[in-house]
Image 1: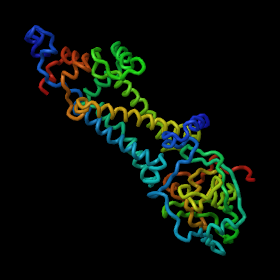
Image 2: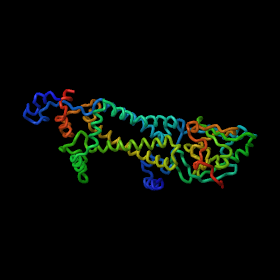
Image 3: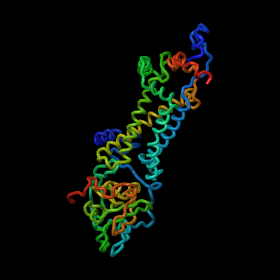
Image 4: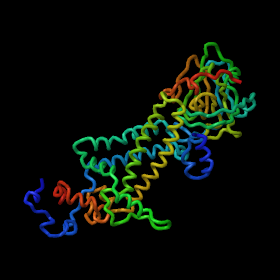
Length: 200
Length: 242
């Protein structure tokens, strides 16, 4: 049904009503604070917590690391979906290896520089999902409204796991529920209810 | 039952003419206090639902407002509260006027069919409500509007509940509920906007939703069958001088 509606929407493309009613092939832009936050001057992504070498990475530092490209459907837990979104970034587990995970760390805790939003993933879920710290989306730098300069992209999990405006990644010894999870969303956000069988 | 009936005298026999033209133009009660309260409470809640709904789904408004969790809570609370004024209004002893108007909405007369024929005349002609048909208290356009609001309101409530309490529902249900809720919301706003335009361009009818009463001259023109009901109904003296 959504495919048929998308075709109708393509025909309507550019018309006011199609712009006003997303959820049929386009992103619905969410923010939990009063607008889209501006990155702090001299933005750096922090990787800290239970690590041997805390990292402070500017966007060019991330771009210099081995890149992972992936294409995945972006699925919101409330039902809308954007097919085949292309991402480029650094695999979360690669970043963790770079920082040196200390024994006892089992999970990531993510914070946004909007000051409010948080998220979580176990290290195992990060590996199983192939989550990346993304600086490019749909062939261009991640825009401000889509969570730029740097956000998470967690394929095979619902969209709320892909935290926008990412400012810090902490290695922690147990999962701390994120913003929507405190508000009742599932902490394990697999779209199919379980991890994908094989990751390429 | 009626004082005049008890004396065997009616206005007709007293004046020797049909009752309506010779009566003093005492206003009729079009909407009683309960109906008006239900209307304006529902309108206020609808306004909240529309504004917060826009702040959840329309990208430019989302950018302006943000605060998704709070906006969502207000939207859900107002949405769940929307049917409450109506249900309270219709339930009690005080709901007689509202209940009988609902009955009127659900009955279609041959005059209604003729009204549609002449309200939508040949291409290029101006759309206007025709005079001279024995239309009741509500014209067929208003009846259609009421049917849409009732049906679409239930669908919005159900699809909204699926979106709010999504966990038991499979993803395909949520996708369907999203599409239905968004698009029906647009249709709903357009229909209500039409309702508001009609109110703005019809001052006498609009005033009757504020003060309750409307002139017999209006009823003669727009709702002659209702005027007949009021004149020959079981309790014709009740509303005089109100």
